[in-house]
Amino acid sequence: MSGWFESKMAGWDRLTEGEKDYLFANPWDAFAIERNSKIAQQEAARRFGKGSLHNGAGDAFRHCYWNALLARDLGKGNAIAFSTAHEGFPNNPAGERDMDLHNNSVGSEIGAAHPHASDGVLSNLCFDALQSGRLKVLKP
Image (tube, rainbow, N blue to C red; front, side, top):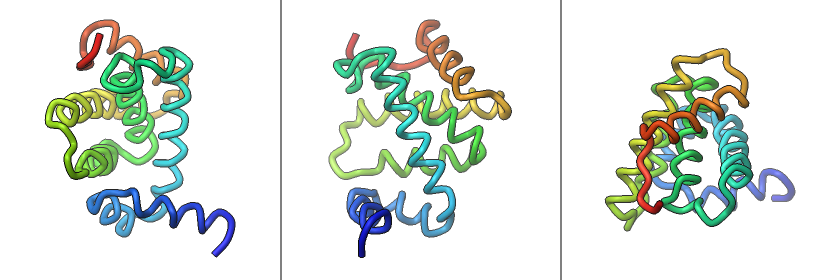
């Protein structure tokens, strides 16, 4: 193995069993999932800095934005299915899992309600959801 395929297979070991099951059934979704994950991570770091990307406002925003992008690109059901599977890793603290699932749900609602929105519009809608208190944050 070499190149792109090798790097993707190395990442396969870090997926939950639920994520693997989802990707076996929906292999082409992997491209949108990875692309949107990177976009959400970069936008959260840009808006909030790296210090709030674990249980803080940046983390809440990132989960919302990632799921808004996924719902727009893959449909709300698929966004929820994959992001729920993503939280199914062993020893995921219940409070963190609940926060992430809540924020994923808000994001998928936003993406489903705006199926033709640009990345920037979805980013702003998730930021508005954070500012209005719709997103859960564990650390201020």
